[in-house]
Image (cartoon, rainbow, N blue to C red):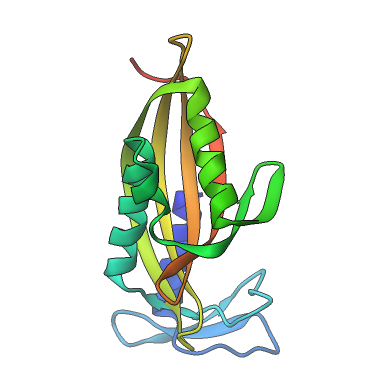
Length: 180
């Protein structure tokens, strides 16, 4: 997933124009020679060169929130969230109040004694029309439950930012054995 997103982001920065009636795009290469590229698919809701580099302060805000959750500082974790948040993950896609999200965070700690985040990478993007902003995080989450059992997840979080607040988290996870 990380490689796919990085390729999409790299391609988005490279595209110079898009003919929306076909899947062909003309791009300028490093040596200023243009070439026609035929893509098997185009995004349905925007052109393929829709994204610019986003505000790095959004990354810092999202990371502080994640650090708050990791250290069981729920107030810090909740600070950047909007009053209503959409949470999408495996088997869940709900819109909830900030108070419900706070309760969910607190409840999740009932079965855990420790969480360790090992960050792989992050990126902020903003749409060319400046209406849509996301921060994407790639990280490993290692959890110790109350029985002392260790489990781990590989996570990719797409976090939507609106008016300086987190309004959506779309989380993709994969389980794998923890290295102890």
